[in-house]
Length: 268
Image (cartoon, rainbow, N blue to C red; front, side, top):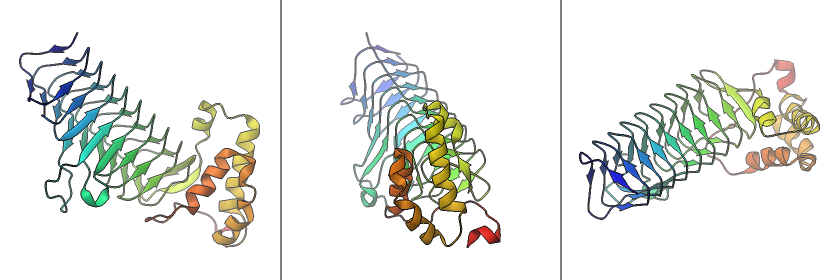
């Protein structure tokens, strides 16, 4: 049974699923869609063309579906889509997309957004992503599945973070982070691989060895990066993770690639 507190305000036209709980002082706009089993604790604002998948829990003062923070936005009916079973903590903000970015901000399933995190306009966030307190994504970012972004980190607009990467807390990410990478720093650099995350995903010792070998030959071997990439690309098929890293590097991008800091003799 759906339960709506008398102090909540639901505009005509909003679609509310079954077994939804909407607490006091929540506001839900006329173009919003709230999936089955969602819980809006209190003081939640859902506006714009926003859809929230089943099973989400949204905490006080979250603001979802507001106008994108973009000078190019002119009031077009752009959208925000949030997947199923997400946890959205206090004061999280997510805007809709812009026409120039495809008109859609999209978040996957089972994501956990801790307090005061922000997902900018036109971002694409995968499944099982965790953003710790105060982490923010600029517009047009792409975040793969199982990514962890540490607290107070900031990701520059148009940056890509590959699947299963980890961003350390208080990092500024202005370059694309490869899948399975671990990045850290005020201007984040690659520190290695997210071995903890790979173990959690049940990587065998052999798989870990293969991916580490691929990473070391790619980033720490002799010659230029282009030469090293050409040399190791043929071996990327040894493991799906290596193949994913290679495909990520070859993909068209708007930001540079995040590299490790290496000694001059290693840099080529």
